[in-house]
Length: 284
Image 1 (tube, rainbow, N blue to C red):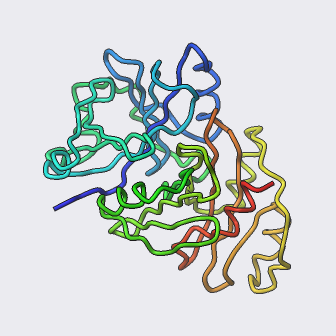
Image 2: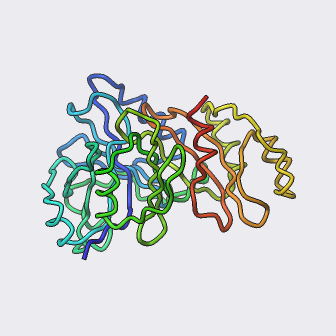
């Protein structure tokens, strides 16, 4: 049976084109901590709570950015997708139909740490504080609609749940991870992350303190349905969808790390990534 439980993001850059210090400074401002580095390749592992990012230096990318999605998987899935073993990250790899890398950690490894054991050197074992409040990656935004791309993710176990004017929505089998495909874009690649946090207002404050520029968002509602949250939504320049009983309250940071955007949100009984809010981030 196909198994693909989302686990981590892969970010790639070419150090001949992109300054490593710029990448590392951006990750640190977002609250990530470097935990380990590969014993022979320029690959590092960065984390914040359950947000995990594998960062690799490779000449095989034209632009820095999110290059892949990592999943806990099984041998059947690895064989089914005809994966090859990539020694630069010590994982099995295939690609989706747009060339985004799909990385698999086999279930013979109980955790990502088991897979990396022996291949990576631990740099930091200190308690992983939520430096800006990020909890977990709950979705990605992928450029470019293609029928075969949709088929690929459904083969991977995702459910096609919605076709909107601007985005198609695919949800993982365990309902914990969402792929949004931007139907308007002729580009290819993974342009943004969606990250859940404890308190979007506190995270907004911490990112301002860390000197990251957040997008000035246009308020298209008076947010009367959000009760006690109204003044904070407006005061912290956030946007929201839903109501006080079921909501997502969000903010957006463009390019805190070269080629990577982040939507960060607090939510209550609200699974979806809202199309209208996504459109607001990328339309203006």
